[in-house]
Image (tube, rainbow, N blue to C red; front, top):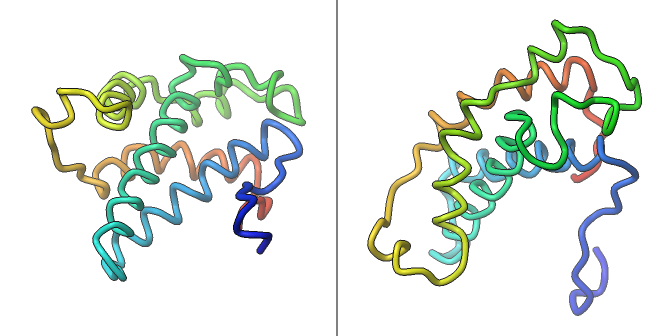
Length: 148
């Protein structure tokens, strides 16, 4: 660990490391949420928000609708070229369509809709929807312990 007064995340050496980091952090938050042991309520809420943040980032990536896109491996992949089957296996536009807007609305700013539209998040169902993309991604790009 570093000086607690100078918070920082691990250095990422490229776009692929960023994607691996997002997967690592989503998995960490999911595992903690499913374990269900918390020192206090704030830790629980922080973990929910961490899960949602990393889920949204991966939904955008696997949905190929934002900046880094699974559909454009020439930007983020050291292999530069993936087969059509590999590309298809790491894409799911429904994730972005289904969750990104809802998560962004929930996490962003102090808005009226946060109080009016408080909701539960089914993390098991949500993770089940992104898991095939993650598993296929990790088959193509084995885990490179970026985070933990």
